[in-house]
Length: 350
Ligand SMILES: NC(=O)c1ccc[n+]([C@@H]2O[C@H](COP(=O)([O-])OP(=O)(O)OC[C@H]3O[C@@H](n4cnc5c(N)ncnc54)[C@H](O)[C@@H]3O)[C@@H](O)[C@H]2O)c1
Image (spheres, rainbow, N blue to C red):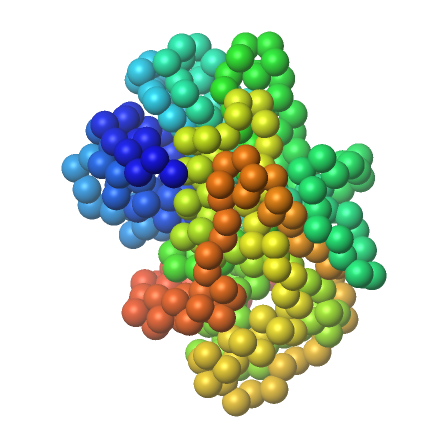
């Protein structure tokens, strides 16, 4: 990638206080942009993730707020849309909150950005899980042109697809230069358990599998393996993801779609073993039945198109990524414990 693509540029990162967004912001700062505007309502993130840097302007509030939209400068060069209602289980608990923060966000943001004639690229965080074939047999790498089902297990998944549909509409109708980045399972530093507001289920605290397992393993707890840990995922380290998102903006073709994936299939049992080894957790895993909403089984993403067309390849192995994430978790234990403790009352009264 041209190391200077974003030098002197004016950038917008919606959801930039979040896990992936804050890692992207850190990587963008290395290229010395003129300004990074972060719009975030801290619904599932913590203010500690926003770096203290004079080039950052933090706008606290939802991107659906008409005043915030109106006051965005018209001379933005690049935008990344990473806001969502985190995550699948929260959306099942409250589909309307998902609609407000995961569907309306995309529609209102794209509708505003379409008026900015100097915008070079808008990158949308799409979800690989929304297109993956549901299988517990041998998984095949999911390509960008995989068929998409009209039946989905969560409002979250539906919203992520609607974002793609609106992206396509605003590209074909208004030439909004949108690039869709389909994420596999991201893990790494700055994903804070419990970050943000209570969203109705234990998954406000226990977010994705990797930070949950790391926290439990560091506390010498048994790692819970739904369905015996037989499901598999494509885990991509967050710094690779941030590079991929920058590659999408720098070299992605407007209107097109790229997987951001490691291309490596790892079972949840393998993940648990690596985490127990790295953290020195002696407690055996806890084998459990399948979760009722999750029929996604085994999956991983194809890396061919993004390697060929935007020169993106993930570089960090799962072992190395877990070592870095464990080190970060240990160094940030007090902050993570603070975020988790915000929800003690709700967790005790479920
Ligand atoms: N992490 C993954 O494995 C993964 C996988 C597939 C897709 N994605 C997508 O990547 C993006 C980032 O995910 P993440 O893991 O960093 O989650 P995250 O929850 O850490 O980040 C989402 C951010 O959006 C903010 N937000 C929510 N509603 C908002 C609103 N109305 N206005 C402004 N900001 C709002 C949240 O406060 C949070 O900071 C999301 O769009 C998500 O759907 C993530």
